[in-house]
Amino acid sequence: MDPEDKNPPRLSNALDGFLLRTGRITSWLNGILVVVIIVQVVLRYVFGRGLVSLEELQWHLYAIGIMIGIPYCIVTNSHIRLDLLHQGFTKRRQEKVEILGILLLLMPMIVVVFWHSLDFLDDAWRINERSDAPMGLCCRWFIKAFIPIGFGLLFLAAFSRLIRAFKFLKKP
Image 1: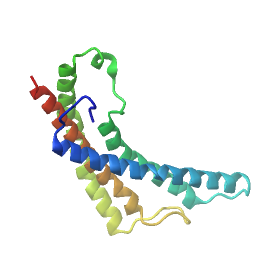
Image 2: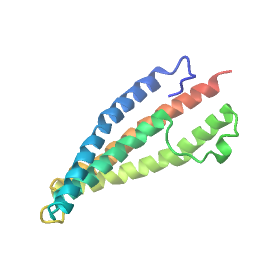
Image 3: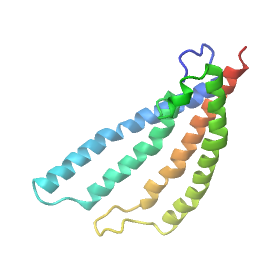
């Protein structure tokens, strides 16, 4: 979201608001993740016995945080970018580069990953995939569902950013 934009597009505002709320709600999982890590460390190093399910839960919470966090970073413009050239560009040129990057790089990648992740999720759901570890977590499809969810949200974030960039270029 651009704080300098006095009249942002309504669709962009709605998408960004949804993505910001989703990101903020999901960020609370980091607190749960910290608790899970502390419990796992105490179990392993104090009692000499860790739990596979806690180990896997850590990875699941990391995955959810990353898949929901990436669209949040796009909306807040806090994602990592290579600014060596970008910082020297005028705002108009920055927006043109942003449009080209979204249309030629980001959107095709989102579509390909989203499309292929549906089969990946479907297979996991169909066989009720679970961890290979004897005491591991069940319902592997649940974590795999965050791939299309995350990339769907990333598509919305990129689309919103695209609307803002085109609006900026329309200004005289």
